[in-house]
View 1: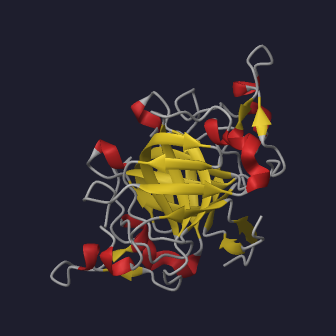
View 2: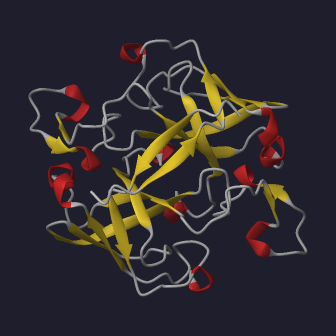
Length: 138
Length: 138
């Protein structure tokens, strides 16, 4: 590797009833519970314009994942041949960034309620972006 | 902030004819040119399973962006009121991660050709993920 690295900061944290990765559904559409995204106070102005009903992409840092994994059995199914992690959504990957498309159901100051999120309680949030209108950009 | 930070590694780099951020279209659908994604040799096995035709999400590190920006005029249009960066796709944000949905047109070992990419030459790549079938997960 080039060994270049960049410090990623936690801008907030997930509050969820999910506490163990083993409980978490593998994707957000699979019965994940609602959750709160709780942001750091000094980033308040960065949230201006996010309203209930907004569709957003939340990027998280999956801090319990392994970073030295390069191949996995898709969805943990040992009957399926190993694939490269970049061809899968495995949390285990060199930079374990989680990507979650969610709908904001409530805005309460530094807290955003989202409809479904598979990330566990305490997962650091690293970015939030709007979903764009054009499906090609999602 | 909590001051927690996590080191993000460059897993590869963008090769593009775009060299200046000012030339880059603001979103990938706006006449962005094709580009190559060139990966670090030791991550080769992580690419297994990515084939021509695949739709993938590329995450980049926008290393020329400002990290201390919390509000912007959307799309740089001064006639529009300032919004929080998390309500926009501005590259300037606390963690300047670029999110690009692209189609792979060619696979050549450690190099993936993609159809359109608005990131400039030399932009570090930090992750690649497949687009999932269900639009709710995009």
